[in-house]
Length: 234
Image 1 (spheres, rainbow, N blue to C red):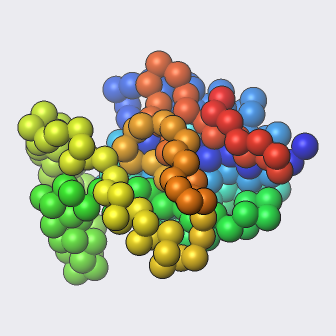
Image 2 (tube, helix red, strand yellow; image 1 turned 180 degrees about the vertical axis):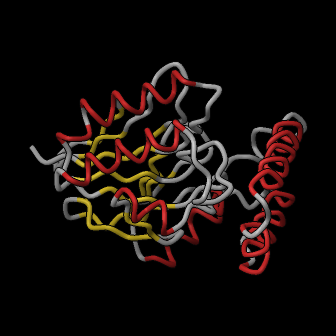
């Protein structure tokens, strides 16, 4: 039976090798049985440019390349941690980059895909930060800094993000109901799949909307498998 996989928020990094192994296991044992794979952001815990190289990055490239070379397309929507992942990385492994919002025909159901951070409009401080870092001139400037400098900046941002989360209520870091409804209306869909909030669930929203939230990866993986007649987390 045809099957499409969706994953997000793996936050792969050198200091959590068990996450890398979970990813490798999935890419070798399950993904080859699918029709397509969609990665909805935050594959990496942080991305400072396609010129960065490490054993972890090469492992990820290899796994994606092996999948796409088998004829299974792999798509990627940028997350809030890896929004600088670019064409050079994608070309090296056959990854197809998608815009922040993308509609697919999922076995007859038009489905909106996104990372999910743009729906968290109650987190005003984050939305201001996001607006700044997505300015093209800022990205160009950052990517032209020496790699060592970018690494130091990334570490400071990561530390600040972890500190800030301690003082934010769970409600602020979740999606805003009005923003969700606006997305359904604007894109003329009744089904949405996203990540970012780490709150794996399938929400039924009256009168006829469905919002599927991908979980983050920790001790286990969060994998959504969709077929013509089923939607389930593995």
